[in-house]
Length: 307
Image 1 (cartoon, rainbow, N blue to C red):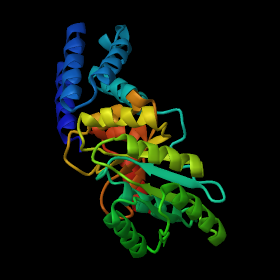
Image 2 (image 1 turned 30 degrees about the vertical axis):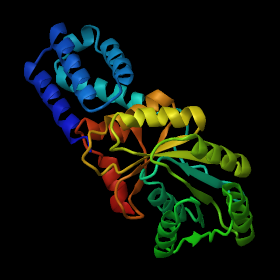
Image 3 (image 1 turned 180 degrees about the horizontal axis):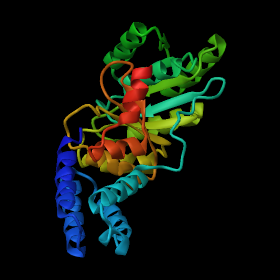
């Protein structure tokens, strides 16, 4: 993902480097090209406007105009501002404490909730946690079976649903987890093709019944501009705590998904990068900015190699 925008930004930075010294016009033209590149990558226009305003302020002054390495200097400025744009003051760690802790996953059908539920359990197992995976989709038996198969294949505890209401599923699953010494309880909630009142009501009732430590919106990063609308709709109706971007290994432009941090003011916490249980990583704004700018995620690669 981001290959297109990375290539476009690379062209802009190479043009700046070739100039040697930069004039005010050179900087203005480059920032205009960055603006167009971001918009073409589906970054929300309000988010683009905010970022370009910050870049304009940061690149104004004699220091850049008189720099002997203006290309490197401006790359550093863009990197720092992009990192800040993607950053959140909130901790990106998943809140799973409690006896048991409860994590609730929400999102549209096909967003990757079920796969993400298993990945989170797999990730937390490395920290000594024994999760309980709970299917909460009463209308789609296939979704329940999918979670059961994935849980069994990764040796993760699975809650066999007998209840007829989502609230009772949540309450009984939490009681079962407490009895068995399992924590956290990860709720894989029902998805729909579109956000509707019945789904929202179900989610509100479930949240009230189990008081989750963490409510995470799982969003398909290949959704395009609809990602912002989906995020805002869930934000208004269910005040979620953080965002999980799934399918980050795809070839979509990806900019819309990255707009969500700015638009919803909620942190991006996790990235799904493939189908395997291990293909989930914590979101680091500085590393993402580095990847987008074509600088690579050196720290991430080193960490992966050490695991």
